[in-house]
Structure formats: C-alpha cells, structure tokens
Length: 386
Image (cartoon, rainbow, N blue to C red):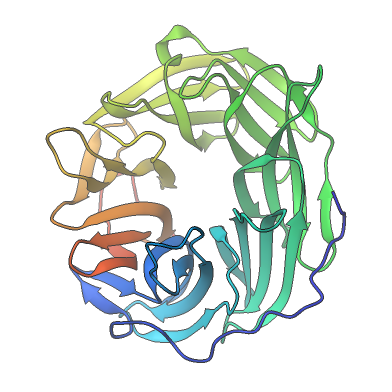
C-alpha cells in the first residue's frame, strides 16, 4: 500500500459530447443520457431540481477488442431532462461509480476501479456542482485484493468506506473502515478479523457499521462493529439462514430491518433485528422473484420503500418500487415492464418524490443512463418532511 498516493497529473475532460441522442431524451417517462456505448449509471444525488449522475461508458464499440476501454461520465440535469453540464474522462479509468453526494456546492464521488492495466482499486473525485470542474482527484493503489461494500459521506465531508480483505494466515478475512479524503488521502481504522467470508456490510452511522458473514448467498453471523471492536456477535437463526442481506434500515435507535433476497425464491424479505436484546423476527416476504442481491431500501416517514429488479423463467425482467406501511403491509407499488429492461443501481428521496436511477437497456437503441422520478401518493402514517 502506498499511503497518501495522489495523482500529479490533472485529468482533462472532453469539451464536446459524443452522445447519439438529444440531451435528456425522455423514454417512457425516464430522463435518459447516452454518452457512448454500453452506458451504465452508477449513482445519483439530488439538490432541488437538479439531478447529479455518475456513470461509465465505452467510447467505441469494438467486439474484437480484448480489453474494452471504460470511461467515466458525470453530469447534471434538471427534473425536465435538460442537460446542465457534463464531463467525460479523456483516458479510460475503468471506474464503477458507487456513490455521489452534493454538499455546499461541491460534488463528492467515490468509485471502484477494475482495471486490467494498473493496481488502482478506488477513485475519489471532488468537483464543483455548478459546472463539474474537477477540484481534486485521488486514486488508491493496492496490490492486495479487496472488496468494497458500502460508502457514504460523513460529517467531516469524507467518504466513509467499508472494505474487506482476504488475508493469509490465522487472521482469515478482515474488514475495516476508512475515511477517504481527496486532499489528505485516507485514514484507516484497525482491521476486525474473523474466520469466514463477508457477504455484506452497511454503515449505520459515522462510528458504527454492521457486517454479515457466511458462504456466498448465506448469512450465518451478524456483527455490529465500532471502529475495530465488535460490540455484538450474533449467530443468525435458521429462519433467515439461507438468505443474503442486501440492505439495512434503522427503524428506531438500535432496531433494524434486514432486507434479504434468495435466488429463485420469493421475496424480498424483511427481518427485524433488535440490538439491545439480540432478537430476530420475520416481518414480511413479498411475492416477487427478485434478482439475487438487487434490493435497495429507504425509510419513508414511518414506512419503508424497497426498490429491486425481479425476473423468473416466465416473466421478463421488471423494475419494482414497493411502499410498505408501518404494519409492513404493501400500500402502493410501481412496476416497469416491457421490451426494455431497467436495471436499478441507486435510489434517492426528495420530499414525496423518489428518484430511481439505473441503466435502461433497449434492444433497438442500446443502453442509456436513466432516472425515473416517481411521486408517492399520500399514505396515512407515511408523511415525510424535506
């Protein structure tokens, strides 16, 4: 590891667009952008009537190329789909953007690099939100394979990142939290290690996170970790043993809902976890066939929102948004089905509007970066503020 590694070369951006369609072209009510081939939207942020997006694309489609050159793209559009500004990387960076946030006129972006050409594993951008001008760029170089599970902006305007590494020897698999800063590099908390594999981890707050351990697709152990010390180590009962945790919602302090899926079985499912008394309990399972690991969740007042893709051998892929009331009954839902697939990658809320973001795949026109703005109806007990 080379701590404090910074790029001394400033990345320049193309001044013109290589898009093939009009800015923000509406398709089936989606705001869509197409900077190149095989477009994938990674994450979005909302600020008033502005939607910031971060994604990737291929500048040229070459089916014979051994290595496809992946470029980054970030942009701002208004809620009517009008393009405000956009930025393209000139050189391929192979970054899959996992998070973008906006705070006091600055965009913070964090992504995972999967390059066959370098040892870079993560990228961090700061940019002006008014025009996309790059302020700082930081890349992390690591020769030890690692997995990134979750990231979010903390109170110090740093991305708190949860990573794990498979280390040789008695330590087994280790997980740690680090705070990434585009100016000062990152600070790394000590590893918390266990004999086993991590299937999922989520940040609970600036000082605490939760991790789930077990074989692929199975959750056996739950840990609540503060810095490097586990404050709860709990074996998962058989009722959700076979499920993979996708997301975590805090309902009240120290009480959580675990959102799970299991391949080729109905779901998603929700389970309660109470930290003070270490109790599990099944809440509900929905009658879908969700794609394994695809579910994202948000609290909406006293209610819950689940967004996920679903498919089986009979039904085509669908994108789904489901609102559950305080009793965890389905009150309302939105479904997108049709000739084109919409693969959800992010979900944000602004008052009573939900912004679903992802990749719109059309057989005739290829893939688009796409955002769907959905207004949630008034549901008793679900009222929300700003």
